[in-house]
Image (cartoon, rainbow, N blue to C red; front, top):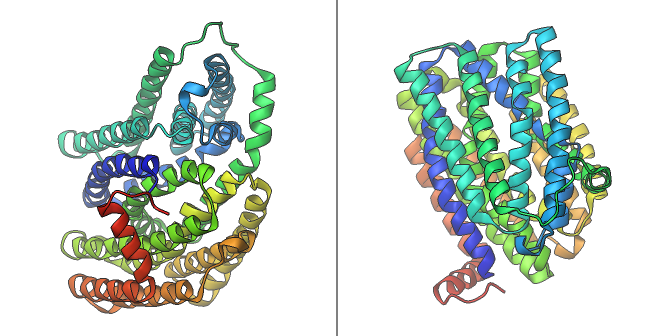
Length: 462
C-alpha cells in the first residue's frame, strides 16, 4: 500500500468514525422528536444545500484539478491567495443577489440556503485544496468541527429549547457553516503568506479555473442531480409524509458516506501519481468487497427503526434498495470518477453523466407509472447506478471488468435485498454477512490474501 494513501485513509477514517457516531445520533433523534412537517422542511433545506457547488461555476473544481498530486509547499502563495480572493468576491456578489431574491419571494427555506452559499462554497474550496495536495489531517479537522457543532446545535434545540420551529434549526445551520468558513479564512490568512500583496480579483485566474473546472463542476452537479433525482420526484409527486419517509432512508446513507469518503478522497491524489492497470484493477476489487460489507449497516439501522422509530417503518424497503445501489455507486465514485479527474477526461465524464441523468429521469417516470409507490424511485436509482458504472467502464477499457466481478456484484445485490426484505434485522444481517464472506473468498481469495499480507508485513501495495 502506498504510504501516503494509507496514512490519508487512516486519518480521514478516524475522523469519519467520529462523524458517523454524531450522524447516527442526529438521524435518529431529529425524526423522533420533530414533527413530520418540520423534519420534511429540514430535509428540503439539505436537499437544496447539496447543490451549493454549482454557484462556483467550476472555479473551485479548476483549482482542485490544477493542484492534484502537488505539495502545498510547492504552490505559489501569492497566486493561491489571489485565487481565493477572486472566488470570495465572486461568491459575495452571487450571495447578495440570491438573498434579495429569496426576500422577494419570501421562502424561508430558500432564504436560509441563500445565506449559506458563500460559506459553503469557500469552505468547499479549502476542502478541495486540502484533498488535492494530500493535506488529509486538515480535512479531517474540518469534518470533525462541522459535524460536532451541527450535532451540538441539534441537541440544544431538541432537548434544551425543545423547539419544533424548523426555521430556527435552519438559521443555526447557517451559523455553523459561517463559523467554519471564518475559521478557515483565519487559518489561511495565518498560514498562506505571500511576499507581494495579492490581487483582490484576478480575471485571468478566474477564466483559467472556470475553463478547466466547469465541465467537472457540471459533472459533479449532474452526479448530485442523479443521486438526488429520486427525492425531487418524491417531493413533487407525493405528499410531505412520503417525502419525510423517503428522505429519512436517504439520510441513513450518510453512514455509508462517512465510511467511504476516506477512500474516495484519498484515491484521487493516489491515482494522480499511480494509475497502472494492475494497481487500479486490484484496488477496484478490494473496493467492491468493501462496498458489499459496508452496506450491511442497513441491518443495524433496521433494528433501531423497529424498536425506536416505528413512525418510519415505511422507509425500510426504500432503505435496502438505496443501500443496494451503493454496490455500484461506491466503486464508481472511488475508481472511475477519480480516474476521469486524474486523466483529465472532463468531457467524457460530463457526457456519460448527462446520458445517465436522462436515463434516470425516464426510469423514475416509468417505474412510478407502473408501481405508483415511493419505492419505485428507489428502484429507478438502483438501475441508474448500474447503468452509470457500465458507461464509465466503456471509457476505461484497459481496466476491464472480469466475469468474477460481475458475478460477485449480482450475488451480493440479490442476497442483500432479499435478506433485508424477508428476515428480521439480526437474522438478515447474519445471512448476508455469511454469504458476503464466503463469496468474497471464493472469487477474490488472491486479492484478499495479498492485501492482508501487505498490511501485516507493511509492504507497498502492488
